[in-house]
Image (cartoon, rainbow, N blue to C red; front, side, top):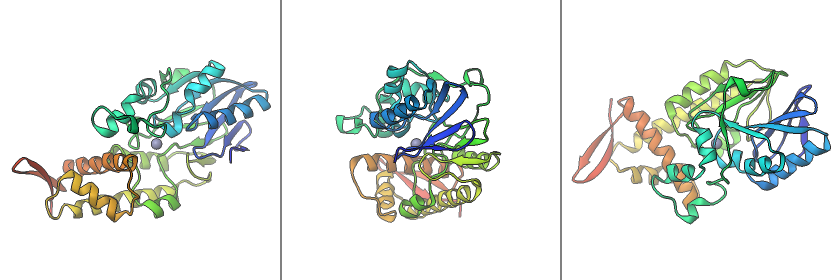
Length: 294
Ligand SMILES: [Zn+2]
């Protein structure tokens, strides 16, 4: 854990709970991709940077989630590096309370503001072509988060963020966190069309061909969508669908998990509603979701 591994002539990654990338674009200047989930991870990254004699100039965040951004404020404080994230994720890095507020759908309690949901806020600019070092490019892969980007170094190494999760994690949990199902399916198409020599998902081992993992993820999304639609065979409230999902997918229940599954289930219901596969009906003052489009 936390060892530095070479992925290309000038590209390295640190294998950690959230993999982080390093690209030496003009020695000794290096940029990083993702900050890790906490100060410990950021400290390990800095140890590597110092041991290699590098200088961190820029930190690129793939998206706003705490396991990718938790170390950002510390890295910026220690090195003065610039920090960039794609689209609206830049605002969520800067005003990180938005993450737990969005998840809960209201002002979040102290328990909802733990380090797994609410990273320390960090000054952050919006990612654009102009701020990329020579040789680095990005591709937007929104859907898992409101805005998400994958980054490619000149060595042909892609850091693919959370667009795909490991086959093992999918076997275990079946449902993975998603914000927008339609965008996510488009992102999977885009990811499968990217050319590169190595693909490094944020929570999995690198692979030279990302397509098998893309297919496993796409299948999982379609299966979960079908399951959620079936849960509405009898009209059900959102909370009842969440309850059925937690049971069906065998998810150990605690508040954070309830919030993550809750946002994901709501997102699936919105997508199914837009596709005409469920409809909403009122029963008294209760809003119910019902299977449609037979
Ligand atoms: Zn994420």
